[in-house]
Amino acid sequence: MWPIRSALFVPAHRRDWVGKALRVKPHGVILDIEDSVPPQFKPQAMEYLKSEIAELRDAGVAAFVRIQPLYDGTEAEIAAAVCDGLTAFVPPKVATAEEVRRLHDLISYAEGKAGVAHGSVGLLVLPETAEGMYNAYHLAKASPRVRGIHGAISGPVSGDFARAFGFRATTGGEEQHYLASKLVLDSRAAGAMYPMAGIFGTHQDDHAAVEALIRKARDFGYTGVAVMHPTHVPIANAVYRPTQEEVDYYTGLIAVFEDAEKKGLGAVAYRGAMVDYAMLPLAREVLAEAARDRG
Image 1 (tube, one colour):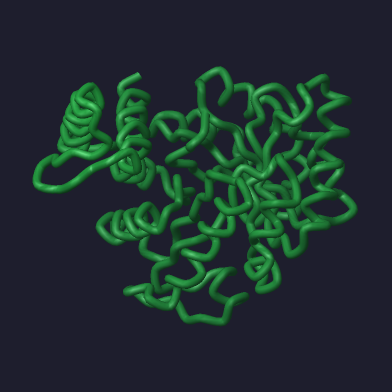
Image 2: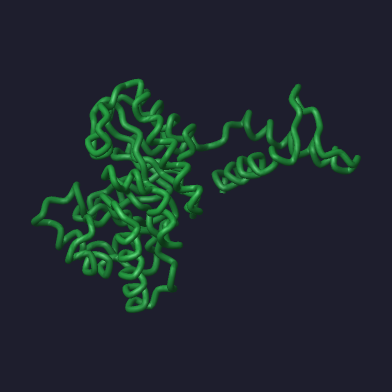
C-alpha cells in the first residue's frame, strides 16, 4: 500500500465514523486512541479497533492506529489492534531509539499471539519532542518496522511540534523549513522511505490554505499527508496525483531515452534539456503512481 498519499484521522471510539471516512476515499485511516478520545472512552475505542481494521481491510484502505505515548498500558493497546489488515502503529512523542525497539518487541509478541506474519505491522514514528526530532535518524534506524517518520506542516496555529521545537508557526512557514527537511532526510537516510506529514494549524474550511500546506509537504519530500477533516482528503489525493502534463512529459522522456539507448547513447536532449539515466527513476515513479491512481 505504500506510499500512502492521504490518511484521515478518525477517533476510534466513534465506530460509525469509519464508514463515513471511506466515502471520501482516503488511502489510509488513522484510528486514534490518543488525543481525540476522552479518557473515559479509551476502553471502548480499544474494543472497536479490530472490527474497524477489518472494515478498512475489506475496503482496501490502509489501517493505522495512533496509540498513546509509551507507558504501562502500551502492551494492551498493541494487543487490541494487532490483527490481519493492520498496516502500522503511529506512536506519538517518541524520543529515543530504545522506545522504538521496545515497541518493535511488543508488536512482535502481539503478532505471534494473533497469528499475524512476523514483521507485517509497521511503525510510523511521531517525534513530537525536541529530543525525538533531534534523534529522528536513530528513531527510523532502530527497527525495520519503521516505514517513515511522521512530521508536520503547520499553519499559524501552533501544535506539539512547534511547542517542542520552540518556533512560532506563521502563515509563511519559513520557521519550519529546517525541521521539515531534516525529518524527511533523516527518515530516508535511515531506510524508512515513506515519511508523512500531519497537516494542521489552519481553519478547516480554508481549503486554499490546506492545499498550500499539502503542496509544501509534497515539495519538501513527504510521500503523503495525514489530515484531520474529511474535506481535506480529496485535496491531498489531487495534490499527490500526477497531472496529465506530467504523465505526458515522462512518457515522452522514457520513449526518447529508449530510442537513444538503441543508438548507444546514454544522454539525449529532450524538450530543450539534457536527460540521462539519473532522470529515469523519477519518470517511472510518476507513471507508476498515475497507473495506481487509475486502478
